[in-house]
Image (cartoon, rainbow, N blue to C red; front, side, top):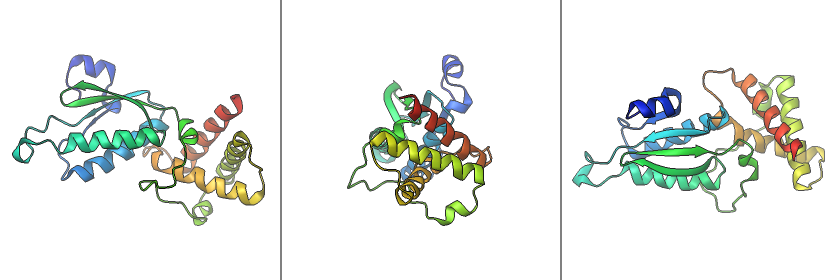
Length: 193
C-alpha cells in the first residue's frame, strides 16, 4: 500500500508494488521485474516500489533493498526503467521508459538476464491479425536499423519482438489481443521517427 495520502493520490494501487512478505529477495526481485515490465506495457509513467528499510533482516542488514537497486540498474540497460529516485527510506519512485525504449536498448553480448527466447511454436497460437502486427513491427524495426527485410531476417526479428514483449503483457487482458495492440503501438512510434 502507498505510504501516505499523497502517495495514494500520486501513484494509486495499480502503480504501487509492495515487496514485503516475499519468501526471499530473489522471489521479490523476479516479481518486481515482471510487474515493472507489465506496467511499462500498460504505459504507466511512474510507479512506486516499496522495499522497506530492512529493519527485520538478519543482523539488521537490508537484503531486499540492494537487490532491487541492482534490478533497477539492469532494467535501465534493457530499456524498461528510465530513472529511479529514492522516494523515502523504504521505497523508490521509478520512471518507466516508453515501450519503444525496449527496441532502442543496445543488445549486449554478455547479457545473462534476458527473457527466455520464444520459439517458433509460439506463433502457432497467435491470431492472423497478431502475426501480421508482429511482422509489421519486425519490418519497421529492421528498417529503422537500416537492415534488409528479407523473410528470414523478418522471422528472426518477429521472434525477438515476442521475446521483448511477452514478459510485460498485462495479466488481465487477452494475451493475443494485448500483443497485437502493443505491437501496433510500437510500430507506429517507429514510423513517426
